[in-house]
Length: 84
Image (cartoon, rainbow, N blue to C red):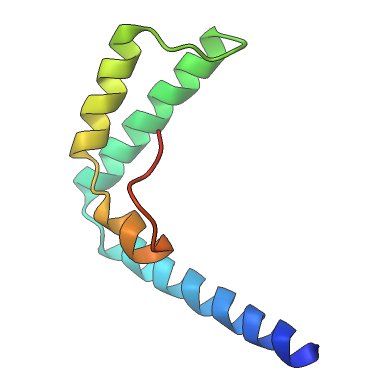
């Protein structure tokens, strides 16, 4: 039981360290695009109690998602593209 917990803690620690290293290796442009996408999502959520983005919001999010470097999420989480 304790060994399983230690293995899990070691796995989580190393995955976090590698995630931080990948964040340091990202370009500032990718970080800026991610911040802009998150700001747009927050603005949409503040406007609506139940989020239903309009077509300009969807277009802006789709444009930002194409610019955003999805390779980071594939390497860290081992999953597909991020869900916006």
